[in-house]
Length: 443
Image (cartoon, rainbow, N blue to C red):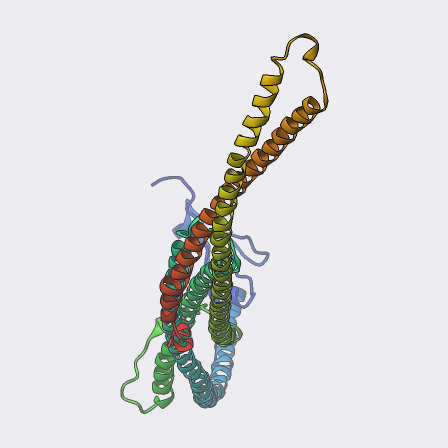
């Protein structure tokens, strides 16, 4: 046998430790403990309980049993109270949940009705805008005819001749009409694009409302089914994971979301109303402007035709006067030529006399009265011939001017006749095809 000292495992009361009563280890020395002795224990030590520890141990067990009994009775009382409270709380919370689900259903129904009302409004506004867009397209197409008429008038009037190719009031009004039609076309195109954009925004707002309405209808169905559940409902199940927090939104953000959608829809409705008024006014104003400009062009054409007729009449009258004056001038030239021819014989006689007298000899070559008279006669005849020649030259020049005036008058008369043909036969009849007010308004 080994001579090592064997020590037994110390004893520890777990319940005493739980109540704060320190247990004593058998290995710890005690003041009352007496070491064992005898032949049975020779060679090793054995730790045993003392009488005091024995009494302390079973007294501790008795105290622990009493404490456990009191605690069990307390737990039973608390359990009964907790059961009653839990049942009452469950019934109360269930009733509150049912009541809140009913209120929620009413709230969802109210918002759904409001959403449905605005969806119908947006649908009606979109259809009205589509009709207006059709009118704008037809009005834009209708402006092509006035534009073609105005440009054709300008092209025809560009073929006027000579001095009649003038930028008169008719051309000014036609150019104004072309510029007006172009500006109206650009305005109609911009307005059509604006209407198309508004239709797109209306559809987007309507889609958001419909999605919100659809979600609320689905949520209404779920909440309605939830409100119909009771403790005796056979279709209820346990869904432990459904009690987890679903942090999607809170009631204020839920309400704000629908209010934002409705606010957006009302903004689009107001924008649609304003745009419809604008388009109606625009079509009315553009139609009035085009028709007013058409009347201005027609008045300018009429006034121009009157001016051309008056000018043509004056030119024809002046042409008749010029022809008469040409005949008179031709007669005058004949008379002047006859007068010049009639001076040849007297001049020949006077010059012959002077020549013969210049043959006188010596002192007979005297500047006597006959000589002086003959010299004066020759000078007087030469002066008369010079005057007659000058007058004949002026008459010829005058006749040349008269001929030029005649040709200019005839050319201008032809120009006026051609211009009147363009105005009366080409331009004015073409303007009878100008669209009516209803066509220009897009109807």
